[in-house]
Length: 319
Picture (cartoon, rainbow, N blue to C red):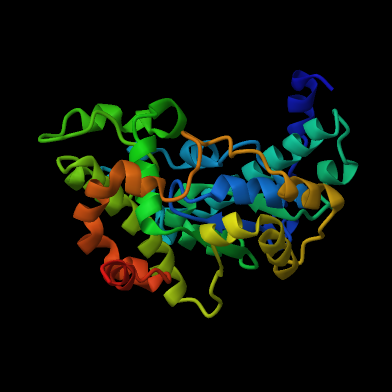
């Protein structure tokens, strides 16, 4: 089915009475930038779930653009949204996920999607969701959350490496605002923008990345401290050590099937499409050791909260 026909068919999706009941335990991967979330998403996407072709930022920006508030951040709280905006969000996500599935099946639309009788298992990997959790909880009360974390030293080093890539990871919408700020050490903002990002633009890049990493992680931790059900925790190191076994166990915990195509993919997964340079053991030590050493005091407490005792490891290496 040509794209134009597909778009016309998509307009029939979601009658006015549509509700979030169209989603059955949607799955949201929460992670700071550059922590391996694309790899995890690509593996889970092979289990038969519906998903978008990219992160859902455009869906959110169309409803809640940066310029809606003076702070121009990616944070969207429950108090910031209306019922109508929430309706637009789940309808947009549903429609886009169905379009992607239809393209995957070469234009064959499931008629149940058009009349609104099909419930879908939906998978979403949008880094800015770290700052959308109040909204997601309200729209999808039965959502399942996976919290992916990585050794913060390697994670922040990867953020530093990726920062110059405005076209891949940057937020060009924020550039006009950024250029009015002085002093500043950067010419654009990369990765989702936490609240208060304008206050750190004069710091060295390593400090900016460490601050951004900490805000992503702490936002997730603080949200789930107020919730009875914690997210499922997965580490990047687990994925690297045993990708197939780790994702298979995660799929079981999420009540997802484990088809042969998922097993085959995890057995020979290609490098992530967001890879900047080839992965290698302790790359951060060889390329960014000095920068990471400077930010350790600012990240140690948060690192310990997610299971990385950087102080103990540093002490061990001295003996």
